[in-house]
Image (cartoon, rainbow, N blue to C red; front, side, top):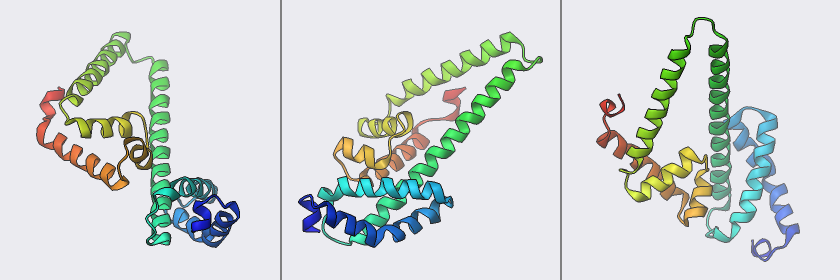
Length: 180
């Protein structure tokens, strides 16, 4: 491990060859797609390499497993979000060509969407500042837990905790009527 930390690439390649199959299996168990699992395995080792200075010297395999699992979950979440967006785009195209949709209805829906978006942005200002920043980075900028942790100088667990607490805060403080 010391050799890797001082930049010995051969030592890191040795670490990769030792854990490559295991990391791939962890990721494949989440994604269930060989090509995606292979890509995310590569990304995981890049993340591991750049995160080694933060490694605390305990449970290397568990630490790498956590990174691999998070990478796979983040990938799956992004893929789902993209599918939702493409479905939304297809629905938008279909509605554009639909004979039955009146132009005034489209304008009205657009205005309603715009008003709701403005309301959400306004309501976001009510969130406690440390939650707001984490929520913005995660939901609006599609940053991963790891990216947010590095950017904010906090642990991944803190990111998870802030997102959880922000959701709890929203449930407790926002009412559905506020959005009607």
